[in-house]
Amino acid sequence: MALILSLTAGIASAKPHLRDVPEIDGTILAVGIADEIRKNCPDISARMLRAMSVVNGLKGRARALGYTDAEIDAYRKSDAEKARLKAKGAAYLKQAGVSPGEPATYCALGQAEIERGGQIGALLRMN
Image (cartoon, rainbow, N blue to C red; front, side, top):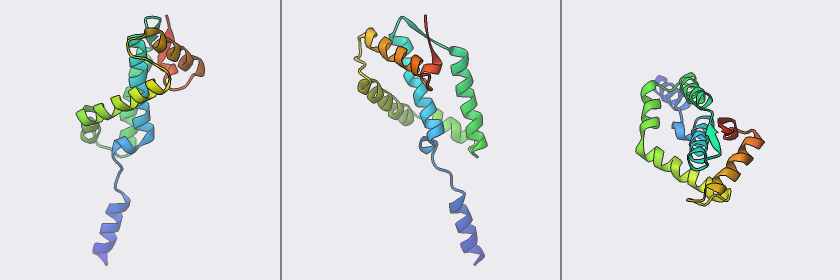
């Protein structure tokens, strides 16, 4: 009986992979999308201090959710996770009407994101 309780407790306390924590994964995706917009639109800059604060806050939030520094770093440095997030970001940009190599489309999306005031727009500013 003690073994069953021990196994049940272990299963109940199992954490999902960080990619499956929307608060973490979604915020990293937003930072990446904002970065793509600012790199491709000459009229938009990043709010670098805010972006750094958001990224640093994510590490603290992940720790508060019970993740170790090793788990956080493994997620953050994973080539597979970087590729997955890049693909999700590219899909978001495409769906939003962005055409690679056309700065005006990045600028239009960036301005819309700033006006909306969401997670992406909060990381950007018009020059």
